[in-house]
Amino acid sequence: MIDGSLQSWIGLTSGAVALASFVPYIRSIVRGQTRPNRASWFIWAFAEIITTATYAASGADATLWIAAGYALGTITVASLSLRYGEGGASMIDVMCLAGASLALIPWLALDQAELALYMIIFVDVLAVFPTLKKAITDPDSEDTTYWSLSFLAAIINLFAIDRWAPEIAAFPIYCFLGAGAILAALLSHSVIRAVSSRLRQPSLPASVPNLQS
Image (cartoon, rainbow, N blue to C red; front, side):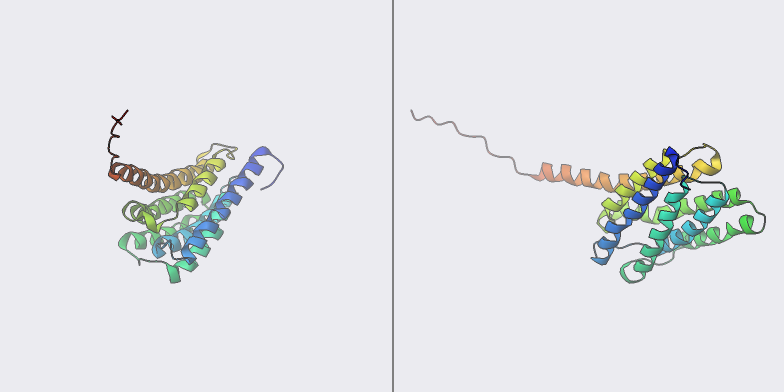
């Protein structure tokens, strides 16, 4: 946790940014501007709780703050999705939920926290796809500010890694790639819209020179 080292303070900053990223997202949800996918967020909430526990059991220290921030934030969004969200459980959602549940077995029964962590990260990756698909097909339903801050938190957390062992680095790398993919999908739509809008603007007629002296 906080031991005075540079990595611990970087990790704490990353966790604070991760938690703060949910503020505009929650505000956007309450205003009806964002419609979170219920299945994705409940799976993420369940998965983040297990991730935080197994990540701590695997020896994570400075990089643990971002997992805790995501856990608290996802629980909040999942709760709000019951009223403001959309979508139900698809086959991939059921598979993700089953995978998250199975990840408890190697940790609780076999005392293999690292294996459980890898399993839950894999489940988390699968849970990204419903929201990534929505970011591509319906970008207005997602909040770009949230994903920008989430991506920033993931970047900061990479610098909090004090030991590049697989069980420590895997989760920060996943956060970086997952948030980055969704943000890239949202920003690409913004760029395409800006270019299309520019191309649709009527060209101004050429000025006629004044021939009168």
